[in-house]
Image 1 (cartoon, one colour):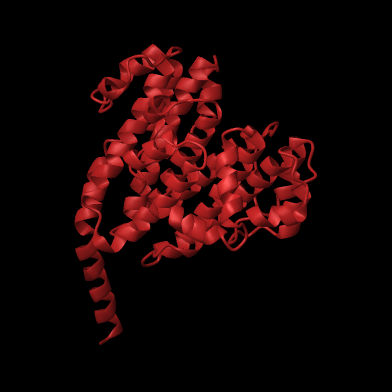
Image 2 (cartoon, helix red, strand yellow):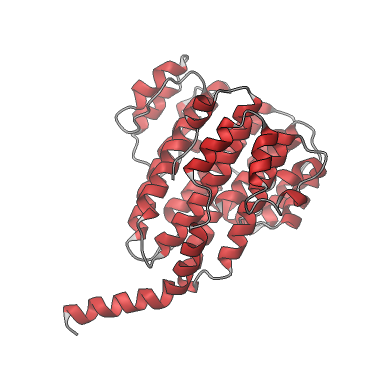
Length: 366
């Protein structure tokens, strides 16, 4: 077969695999909220004004699904999450078989997000009924399994998590560095101890990114693009995790090794140096060679927000121009996620009395 014939066959094959799905995604992409919408939202000055504008969009029918006892900012935040989960569900209806493992791997993020939120909520004494509205069922763990985890008492929390596909994979990964009994105690004690909760959340982050860097089957050239983004996410998460552990009183380098995620580009020596950081303002200089950060950093929240914005922009930028490929689907899902996040940032900013300019500075342009 000639080189020209091979290229034509590959092009034809990609069109057969991704053509229909990409057409569906592009039709949906034309309807997403644009930057001009977010400028208008941020200028409203009240959350009621934002809601009034959203009710003239495809969010109109979503608000009816939000619990009536919610505050106005919560109403928008929950509606954004509900809409995002619905969109992911609809995309699954036309994702080609070849792309499903990759999409499932990316969407597994929400299993970890939901699990961490349940654990943190349990720590503050919240019940399932209070947690449920904030669940984003876009991953592989269904609402029933999440409810079982949220309602479990004592050692049963560990048992319920282990019953999920995610739990079995996660505990298989961590068994090499942490014994099962130790892990079980971490789940049990996380409800009572904020320090143990911090360590468990770091462990969950580690399991997620280890899975992303080693366990995903990504076809064609999009593989390298996604893997490069994953490396950046791993670096960001390692930095946050080390600083979180240091805040919880962990100073031992051997303990640190348990929680460092493999697959990033940052040198171990840089991560070790972060254990002794007392002033957050010093962090950007320490990490500048591998992760340049713009703007003033005063808190861990500031740093995490800066990382999230940078990585979100990178995801959208890298996949936005993809044609007839997995990247087109990923680009749409990443954009819808940032639409959700931007709506949440707008209403939080208004609620905190931020100026329109301050609100827009927190948003991700796509």
